[in-house]
Amino acid sequence: MAAAGEANGGTGKLEFSLDVPFPSSREATIALRSLSPDKEPRKGGISKLITVSGSTLSVRWSADEARILRVSVNSFLDHLSLVLETMEMFGPPVAV
Image (cartoon, rainbow, N blue to C red; front, side):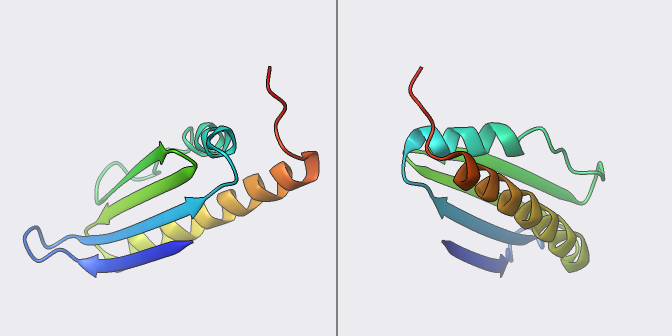
């Protein structure tokens, strides 16, 4: 799992990126579908983009304030942890 945070000098926004490797693209897609319905509670000040490339789930945040960014990332990590625990409990997905 790799993460990087930085202040974007051009826009003045704070940015944070997280890449989560999965054993397969199917599992990464399941995680994406499980985490995508959660919209940011605030309409302004933060944006989040979740994508899958191969077997890697990537999340990119951009925020006006460090506090808003921290709350969003912490909330996402809580949800991701629950998704990972659930996937581990039920085992690898079966091809349909």
